[in-house]
Amino acid sequence: MAEYIESLQNLADQFGKLGGVGRKSAMRMAFSVLDMTPEDAGAFAQAIIDAKEKIHLCPVCMNLTDRELCPVCDDETRDRSTICVVSDARTVMAMEKVREYRGMYHVLHGALSPLNGVTPDKLRIKELLARLEDDAVKEVIVATNADVEGEATAMYISRLLGPLGIKVTRLAYGISVGTDIEAADEVTLYRALQGRRDI
Image: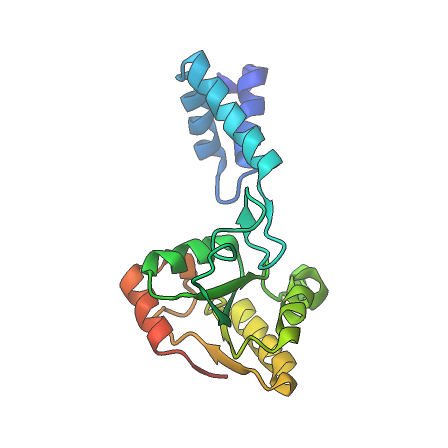
């Protein structure tokens, strides 16, 4: 039984710490590692170590990067008058697949959820406000998820930015309420971008 093999159980326990991975899936992953060659297992372990050591937050937009600046902030051809505010880095990846949006991003690293202890000071809102001080930004698109937390975050940002005279819009939702943005296909995201509205 796998439960009696301590190192295998420990490996499964580590996989079980990953979001959305249940006990059975974690054990399947652990057995998959055992099927690897020593070289592949070493490369797998090294990839985890490299990711943890090299990936950090972009000092401009708070997106994940392994360079000084993320590829978007480093791209001089991007429209710096528009910032798309998203909850996490996965949403940036989903939006970039559309290849239609050419503005900048700002990653909050979460959404407001006071019941879960996620208050405004836990999000990267202070860094967003700092980016709005130079008058170059004309529009902020709030692209948080269409759930309770995402809507609360959108309303909070809208009220916060209102006095600054910056246009604040929200993605139009051809995206179903309760759906994570990164799960949407490219066509749906394109339509949502085109149909964004004031909030």
